[in-house]
Image (cartoon, rainbow, N blue to C red):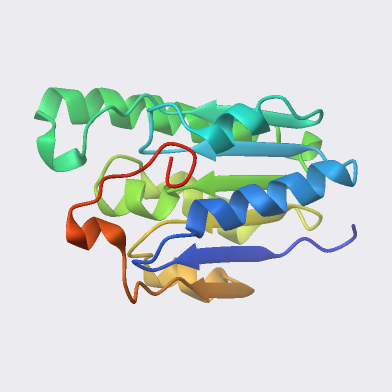
Length: 172
């Protein structure tokens, strides 16, 4: 692939991570080297379990076990340090990556659990061949501006609104 583009999957609807996982599977199936970084999520999930088994796919995750509003300042500081390290590790490997997925990166930044500087630099100095995917709610204007693809997932209706929790194998 000669020209890598930037994808942004955002909105309040279900499917942002699922779209990024699907693209990762497609890329891996075509022999591409994929790094899938997941911020803000630390619980087990079916999609991560499958990605970890695919040849050519590297998965790195934060250890976030709570929502940001449930964390103490000390916990937020620890999570931010760890998530900043995840992004630094990926950036140090960019020449070895064809597709880089930063799942929930917009949310990590909007909640202050990831520093913006490294992402801003990546968006402006991305290697030309790198395909880059950003997911999450409430993206900053600079993310929207940088995106070549902008997909808005809009919730029209969701079982959670009726009190139905996330179901294993479907939402997690």
